[in-house]
Amino acid sequence: MNNTEQVIKKTLPSKVERHKLFGSVNPGPRTKPVEKEQMADLQNSKKDFLFDIDAVGIANVKNPINISSNIKPLNQTTIGTFSFTSRIDKDSKGTNMSRFTEQLNEYYLNNYTIDIETLKIFTKDLATRLNQQDAQMEVCFPWFFERKGPSSELAGLNHANASIRVDFDQEKGHHVEVSLSGTITTLCPCSKEISEYSAHNQRGIVTMTANLSEEFDEREIDWKEALLEAAESNASARIHPVLKRPDEKMVTEQAYENPRFVEDIVRLVAADLYELPYVEKFSVYCKNEESIHLHDAVASLTYDKRQEAHV
Ligand SMILES: Nc1nc2c(ncn2[C@@H]2O[C@H](COP(=O)(O)OP(=O)(O)OP(=O)(O)O)[C@@H](O)[C@H]2O)c(=O)[nH]1
Image (cartoon, protein in one colour):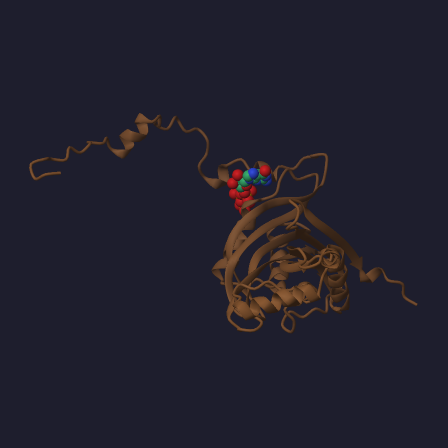
């Protein structure tokens, strides 16, 4: 552009005019009440609605949460994905869905930390707020933990997906289930056995779910750390965010010295969970993302210690 040229700018209509241009219209006549007390409350209608409902509520609610950890960072803010439900009997048309997020926000404003004890209080409060006999909630969140290279000791953050589910019932009390999905390296024993050199390996995702006994004390034990250790200590090798060459050599050799089928992983992890005195019932699922196939290899098992024979 030289000094004599001028910029010719567009003259736009106002924002209101622009909205009209694109189809917005003026509000029509308003006939329905605007006061909450005068509004229809369909969900609170009482009639015979044919069936009880086991669980009704909301899912996929995201909210920032505080968690604590036994591995650094000791206090973390992460994202929780929640679901909240309760039963309703056949005489009620619906639940009061606003109350789930209303309560979540109250806890959030009070800067609560997500732990088992708090969630037990939360579910009991929720049942009271809903005027129901029971309430259930689940929160899933990425948990971060520091991991150092085995030789260089250079640190970085790994993460695993954790979840806590709490069921509250006025008669039965609380029932707590925790879950963790951690990632490991597995090296194929068959490939190692038959090949002149090398062995294929894969990224395995181990998902462990455990029912915790009443005696479990989260002030003494971090269940996230315990479940992660059950998965990683039985792997061919652990996963690291930072690896220098001496570290890489170590994890490569360690994996070769500890080959594992997907079946081996679920059984070995199960043995560790079995040995945790505060775990009553557990399940283990492993998915190996194969490097020589497009498909995954999977295995799972469940075990309930409470069903063991007493002699
Ligand atoms: N029960 C029910 N509510 C729904 C459903 N889908 C959306 N909602 C929403 O639930 C909200 C109303 O929640 P309520 O807690 O019943 O609201 P309220 O009666 O004003 O609140 P309270 O005074 O606490 O009883 C509305 O925003 C609805 O849109 C549904 O499938 N079932």
